[in-house]
Amino acid sequence: MAVAITACSTFEQYCCHSHINNYEQINTDGKRKKKKALSLKLLRQTNYQTYVNITNNKGFRGKITKLCILKEAMEFLYLTEQPQLWVDTNMYASLLQACIELEAFTEGFLIHSHMIKINFKPNMYLNNILLSMYVKFGKLLDGRRVFDKMPQKNRVSWTTLIAGYAQNGFADEALELFSEMHCQGVKANAVTFVCVVSVMAELEAVKLGRQVHGCIIKSECLLNMYLESALVYLYSNCGYLEDALQIFDQMSEREVTAWTVMIAGYAKHEYGEEALRLFNEMKCEGNNPNEYTVTSTLKACGELNALREGKHIHAFITKRKIRQDVYVDSALIDMYVKCGCVSGARKVFDRIPSHNNVSWTSMIAGYAQNGFGKDAISLFRQMLRSGTKPNNFTLVSVLKACVLLKTLKHGKQVHAQIIKNEYEMNTLLLNTLVGLYANCGNLIYARKVFLQLPIRDVVSWTTIIEGHVKQGHGEEALTLFARMLGEGMEPNEFTFTSILRACATLEALEEGKQIHGYINKAQFESDVYVGSALMDVYIKCGNLASAHHVFDRISEPNQFSWNVIIEGYLRHGYRKEALKLICQMHKSGMTSEDEIIVSVLNSYAGNIVG
Image 1 (cartoon, rainbow, N blue to C red):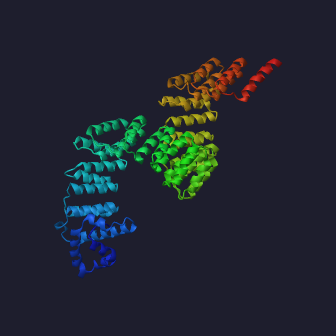
Image 2 (cartoon, rainbow, N blue to C red):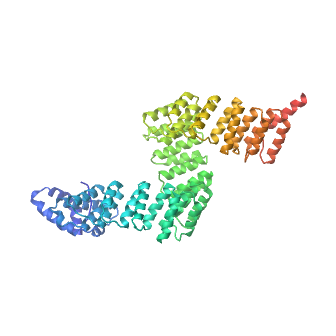
Image 3 (cartoon, rainbow, N blue to C red):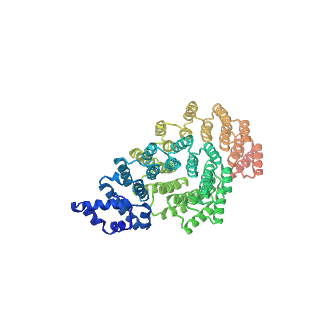
């Protein structure tokens, strides 16, 4: 029995220098009575503070000493006859507190069992320690049983269990318990509010969060920096950045958590420049960013394509020796990947001493996102050889690499592994498989996987429609689009772009007009890619007036949309109109492709020769 705790200085000496011999003596009949007499004396003298004082070595040796003492105390406890005559609350409290400190759950459970066995009735103080122990070790069902059986509960009891639920991801239970606490008239303190507000931040339940914020103000609870940081986290994580900044600016004292959650909020909601500004301000004020701070800031660099700033943060991490865990390494890889610096990402990857699922996936995804399909597949094979099991995100990334290379052979091998290893076939993974088979020309398998989808989202429909369009099956694509609408699924801009390409290829003007109606209803006509695809339908069907009308409705025409309308006029012999559009294009600050200018000049030259 590996166990834990307490005693006086003579007991420590006894444990540390001769405990092995004493274990042998415990089974000797002639010395058993002497041992029991000593146990009674020692356990009566037991005091947790004395235990802390005499074993204040914080290192490994100190912990071993404490474990030896706890082991001895536990054996004395179970050997002593009629313990109910001398055990008390302080003794049990000391033992349980030692179990919590030494992370000795088995021993803590045995102590609780001993209390039940001898019918010892714990008071509220001891029940709170028991509750704290079960919460500490994540045994929330046992903790809830202790809580429910408590004849009396105070604020500590409620807060301990709420915190346990919050820390272990049981958000609904935490909020339900907080509501029950409020109904019973127990006043929450700052610790309670921190737990509840943090839960609401994780759930992004800003409306409920505002109500709790109102309760905090109404209760006149003293706002400390931890509670203020939790409120900043609530509003920043939910996208209410002005509210978060207002609380942040009013804080008299800001520790690293407040800075980090504010920076993370900016990064999450794509205010990268603000995140970088705040990070630099944090450093200027003498605050030390931690691994969570740099992870969020690196995300902002990636979104902004700010490679220079990302490299500076990388150097800062190295210089300040910030703990580089798997999340920091993955954030660095992700930053380099999004900035197009795959070589920088690979250098970070190669320096990681021990790879896990996250680091492998980050690098494989980085290769796939930047068009390095062969490298992604090669690294995936290395991952499998290392014995690391891929997750769904890894599989999605390597399947995308197969699509890039149009290598159905490798894609089928990955699909076979998915089936063999019984991976969870979620919508993301199945959609990617549909895309693999559709883009590689195997529409039969694409449809089979598509039909396996328990829930078909807009990506599922768009992927299968796009696959049929690419393989020249425009009529089937239109049939699928009609089925999609029939099932009540609303197309997005990518769906419209794909199905319009089918209409253009088939020169299906009536179907194009019907889809144009859906586009207007969905308010996508001003989208440059949808508008360009719609123009192409009208141009190929000879309806230039409608094409020009669509062009005028595009909010910000790009070079591609200008080229579509200009080429449309050229195709139908309207050279002057095409030349006017080229001039307008140049006035808008864009340059036309050389091929278009050559086409206009050739058309004029041909007209002169004729």
